[in-house]
Image (cartoon, rainbow, N blue to C red; front, side, top):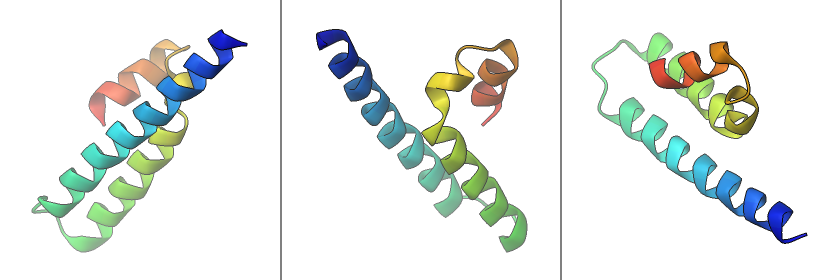
Length: 66
């Protein structure tokens, strides 16, 4: 049970960290608005699923690219 609690805590902190990074990138980007918003939503979606993405090579590469 302690392992599950630890996993959930790490997942929540990972979501927060990745969402903050995505929002910072969104705020300070010089891209045009439609592309910037699409990238931000995509990064927020990845922030929610990052533990699943770590299980595959493609997911890890996607997380590194942003």
